[in-house]
Amino acid sequence: MDLLTYTIVSAVLIMMLHFALGIGEEFKLFITFGIFILGAAMGAYLNSYEFGLGAAIVLSLINW
Image (cartoon, rainbow, N blue to C red; front, top):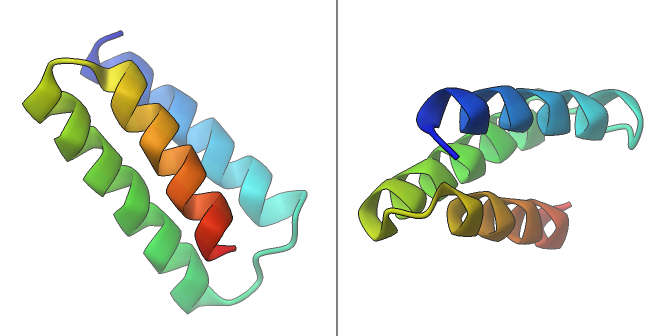
């Protein structure tokens, strides 16, 4: 997985969280963006965007 694929999958997941699960507060949405950016940084550091995506999903569900 490359950075472009990670960005597209993350955008789709954030939209699903926002629209389907009802994250209505802008601050929580901002935190979710930050978590996915942190996941991208972890994926780039470990050369595994799959791990970064998994970590970002888990952290955003814990935060939700």
